[in-house]
Image (tube, rainbow, N blue to C red; front, side, top):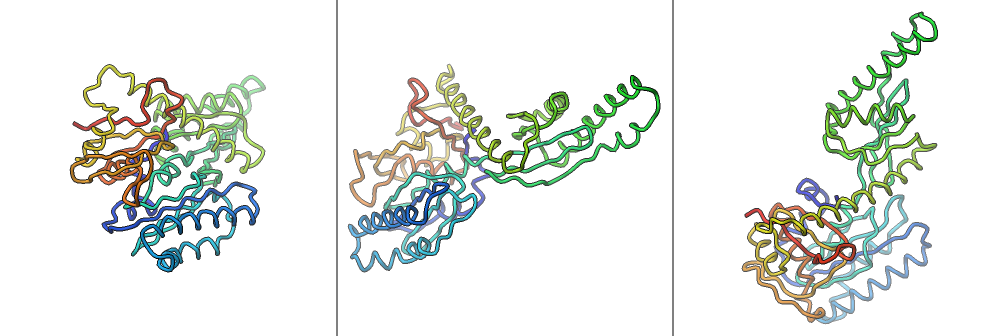
Amino acid sequence: MQVLTQESQKFGLLPAITNSKETGVHTSIFIPLEEGSTNFSIRSIFDSLYQEASGLLQKSMRRSEAEIYLKPVKEVLSSYQSMTGVRGIAIFRSRNAFYHTFLHEPPPQLVVVASSFHIKPLIHCISTRAVCFALTITSRQLKVFKVDGDQASLVQKYSNEFDEVEGKREGGFIGQRKRNKEVIERFVRDVTGRLVKEFKLRRCDVAVLGPKSLRKRLIMELSAKAQVQTFYDTTIFSSIGEMSKTLETALKLKNKERSQKFVNRVAKSSDKSLMTPSLQDIATAAVQGRIERLMIDPSVQIWGLLDRSSGLITTHAEQTSDEDDCVIDDITEEVIKKGGDVVFFDSTRLENVAPYLATLRW
C-alpha cells in the first residue's frame, strides 16, 4: 500500500521537521523536476516559487528581512545541478532552521507559509517510493536485485551446485531429463530457504523473472515458506535499466490498487466502533495519540487551525493568515509523532468515501 509506516518515519529529515518546537513562520517549498526538463524551464519554476515565497513572507516581515530569511533557499536553487533519479526538491525554512532534501517522486508545485512545516507532500513522496526485490532465475543460477525507485543493484547470486554434481551422471536422454527436473526442484527448494532466511522476505514485494516453468516453481515455494507477495512475473529483461523502470511502474500501480481496496474495505466495514470519518473526531484522536492508521487523500487541502492541546479545529475557505495551514497536514504530523501510520488514497475513485478516515486504537 501507499503507507508511511513507523519504520519509514525514522529516516531522513522527517523526525527533525515533525519534532520542531520552534514557533513563528515556517516556509515549505516543493519543487517538481520533470525528466528531460531544460535548465531554462527548471530555473523558471525555481524563480516562480521563490517569488511566491517572498511575497507570502512579506505579509509578516519587511522585504529586506524576507531576503535574508530566504538566502539559504536561494543558494540551494542557484547551485542545483541535474542528478539521476531526482524528481523533486523539498525545502523547509524557519527562523532558526533550514532543511532540504532531494525527492525521487515528483511533488506538487507548492509554497506554504504557515505556523508549522507543511509535510504532506514529503511523506507522500516517501511512502510512494517503489522498493522491492527482483529475483532472476535460470536452471543454473538465481540473482537477487534490490530495486529502489528506478535504480536496481545486484546484491546476491546463488549458483545451482546440484547441477554441477548431479548433471554429469549417465543414463540416456530420459534419465538425464528426469534428473534435470529433480536437480532444478532441489535447487529451487534450497535457494528459497536461503532467500527467506538471508533477506527476510516475509510479506515483501518480489518480482520473479525467468522461464515460465521456473517462475511458477519459485513463486510456489516463496508463497509456501514466507507468504511473499509476488506482484510481477515475466521473462528476464534485456537490461537492468529496463527491468528497474518497468518494475517501478508496476509496483506503484499495485500499491495504489492495494491502498484503494484497503480504504474501501475499511469504509464499508460493518464494524464502525473504532473507525471515524469525522474530521473533528480525527483531530481530537490525533492529539490524544489514539489513531492507529490515518487514511487521507494527499491532494485535499482544508485551511484552518488545529489546537494541538485540545484537538479543536477551525476551518476556513482559504488561508487567512500565516497561522493557517492545511488541518489535514497538521493532523498527519500529530499522527506521525505519536506512532500512527498514514495511508494515501485517491478519494475520487471511491464512492461515498470522505477524503479522510481514521481507525482508532481505542
